[in-house]
Image (tube, rainbow over all chains, first blue to last red; front, side):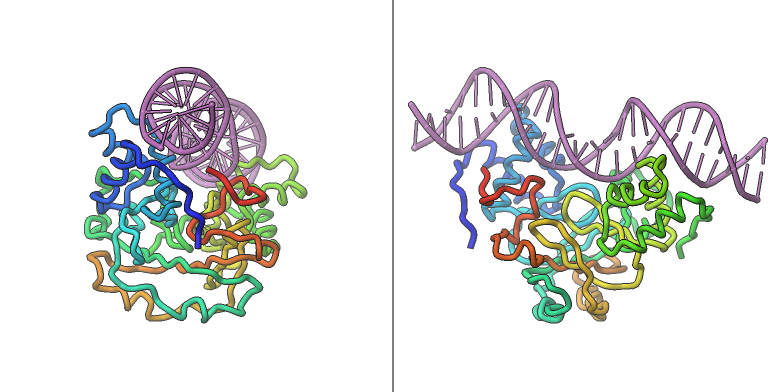
Length: 150
Length: 150
DNA sequence: ATAACTGCAAACGTTTTGCCAGCAT
DNA sequence: ATGCTGGCAAAACGTTTGCAGTTAT
């Protein structure tokens, strides 16, 4: 397993975790910061980053590294896949359980020791499906994944 | 579907593509820059970025957005999966063909319209094997000898 | 006393952009 | 002339870090 480091559940840490668990939007660090700031106006962005890191390392949160520019965090630590809207970057959970055998199918294809996989889906969220006029929703710069372009 | 933009195959563009296709290492923009610089010493990093972007959009190259900090590019545009070493970031190809049915399995799980998937594997390359990496934590910028940090 | 922690600001590495000159159409 | 394009430098972006003071053990 992993040697978990000991840490104090400070006020900041606890609030960050609470808000992260409340939020089901897979927020970026900055979004967590903005949310937490409503309860702790003097918290700093650096603290949020440091704590999201600690929480992720300790297993209390998940660090998502889906494409796009900004890292996202998830307060729900159970295994599940994600869809990301290629247009606005919004992320949603999928209920499908981790697919077994994926890794075995690929073992032997390289000289790497396979220890896990990452499967994300790309899609269009209800809002972006119409692809019409750009709403006020271009927070992401450009989302391009494997040859598709937003 | 996608209105592909027209572009000129300039000298810089061509050399970047050539070198990218020669390189089988899934280089970062900077690595492409360094390589191309041997043939065109006055090329600028900005030009490399702009052209990798254009080439990716046009389908002549692939923009890989596997986790980690730096974006990688691939001159081989055929469909294949990748393994990334969680410790050093090295990327290798897998010969496995795209798995069909993955997207169908997940359609209906959300209100997103699924248009694709991204499957990457995590692993340890021959060099990094036996050095104990934590699969839940993407590689750090600074790799510490004994793997400990706060 | 010590070690973890915070806020703040500065630093960092990567990627993008503005400007202007050059070249193809 | 119009519109891509390239070089250069500066800006922007998300994230990390150094510092000095604070808090919990």
